[in-house]
Amino acid sequence: MKVGDITAVLEEFAPLHIQESWDNSGLIIGSPEDEVHGVLVGFDCTSALIDEAVEKGCDMVVTHHPLIFKGIRRIDGKDPVGAAIMQAIRSGVAVYAAHTTADKVITGVSGAMARRLELKNVSILVPEADGTVGLGCMGDLPRPMTGSEALEYVREKFGLKVIRSSKPLEEPFRKVALLGGSGGGEIPQAQAKGAQLFITADISYHNFFTPEGFMVMDVGHFESEVEIVDIFVAQIRKKFPTFASYKSSALDRSNPVHYFVV
Image (spheres, rainbow, N blue to C red):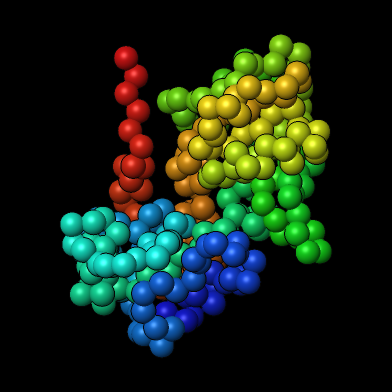
């Protein structure tokens, strides 16, 4: 097996050409011609993930977030990104990321959120090109809910400790928009499409001042996107059922955000 065989599977699912212009999806470390004997899939490419890959005999890791995102002026082992880069190269581990590519396919990040909430009549929130890809999605809740009921429903479905929310709506509603990761910039599109609730992450303070009949929930960046790891693993195993592909055993502990409830 070669690295290029694995990347071909991932790019059939989430093509590189649809990524956002500012993104860095694709093969970040390694060559498509490198031999690969095992793949470890995680959420962020950290030194701990590279360690786990080496322990499992994997010479490739696949993550959602790119290891190298912005320009790097120096590679320093004291910096988390620099340390992971050095460790991957020294260990001969190829690194691949499917970031906004996986955000923009309906079977990717936001679609997984919709399935978790059992939404009906799901469509793309911000469609592009021929309408088959784009950011976020919209749909209808299985039943009408008040804001307070929706908060409990979302908390239970995502297994959350904390939800940041604007003032809950008192009247029952069904129309929901979703966008995994940092989706505050798409709040106007969600409103324009008639959503009564927008679920995303990394919402800034002022966006919690919502107009009448609209509310927002911030469920956490990691929490909104982490299901994509299972999707990547499933794609690889579907194509190569006997190949050594693993989901990181430390995934549940890899969220860099820690919550303290007192």
